[in-house]
Image (cartoon, rainbow over all chains, first blue to last red; front, side, top):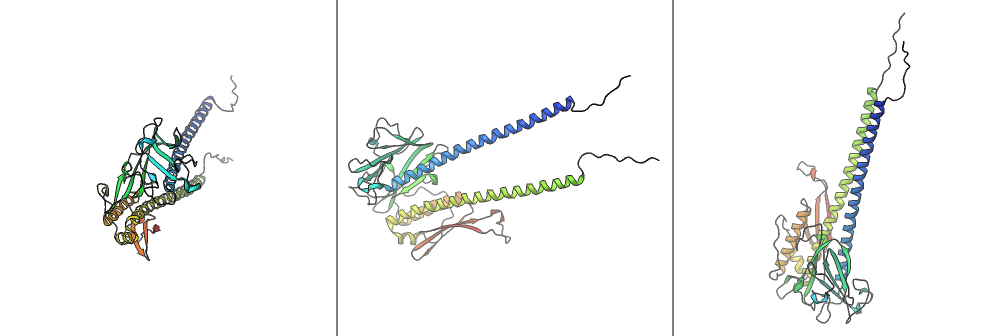
Amino acid sequence: MVITTPQSGSSLVGLLVGLALGLLVVGIGVQSFAYFAGETLNQQVRLATATSQRVTAHFLSAQARHAGGLTPASATNLNLVAPQPATLSSADAGANGDVLNVAQPATAGLDAADCLGRSKAVGNQIQSSFWVSSENLRCRASNESSNQPLSAGWAQMTGEVAMATAVGIQWLPLASAPKDGGGILAYRLCLTALDTPVLTPPNCPLTHRTRTR
Amino acid sequence: MRTARPQAWHGFALIDALVALVIVGIMTVGFSNAWLQFQRTTQLTQMRQTAHALLDDLAQNLLVHDARFGTASRITLTTGSLPSGDALPGIACRDRACNASEFSDATLQAWAYAVHSALPLATLTVTAESGWQRWEIAWPQNPSAMPADGTESPLTRVFMWL
């Protein structure tokens, strides 16, 4: 005669099922966490890029608006000078697009500063050159031998000037602008980010445009 | 005498299941509404930013017009009907210089196209008053309520004086 005693607790099958369910739940949790962590990281990268681009566009706009101080352009007072390729030294990589040379009169006082935030004048002017190369917006003050990357994530920079003519207004490439700044009504810069298609005005993304007088 | 033994019941009672369903349903509806509201607010903020950027871009071109042709010319040539914006504008004022009329036309066409591309349901108006112009971009707050059944959605308006 066999006497069976009542059993209590979990059976082996129950334990295995419980373990499997537990692993499944933990696996889903880990996957979810990894997904959201990745998304958060991507979002942070995008936010950092957008912030960098916005700050850069604002910086360029401010530099251009300060060009020439408060005095109007004239043949003897260079405000925002059109590209002078010679201003790029051999140490500067080739520009992808146009080169923007900004000149401010030293008499503008505290408002006049080069792209490095200093007020070192050369020939009564404080000059800075801006261009895009190696996916960076770079600048070089005219009294410096090397350039300074300002922000990353740029494909190219192009520019146009609105010229006052005898019969009206004509948009010209930046390279065609007169170096004395005479007759220039406005500037339009198009900074193209790496993650956007390369567009030319007037289809340049609005957020990457800046214009000044 | 034999008596019936009470039978033990296991599992959820029907009433418990219904209560749980109602609670879950209320939570789902509440969460969905909150999420929808959040998305609408975010979208409205983005559309407002876009509209302001479009107005700012227009202002730059109008100031160029002022610098060359004068404010009176700008007000005369740009007040009135605006282009629809559904046609891609040509590249104007590049091969040759534009006069005041051509420049204002090019400005308005390019701007209308930009607005149409970014805010397809927007309507544009410009009015002149005491030497100033009021430029306005307006679009329906709820485009799904647009059918002409008397439930037209109120408009969101962004404007500038120049």
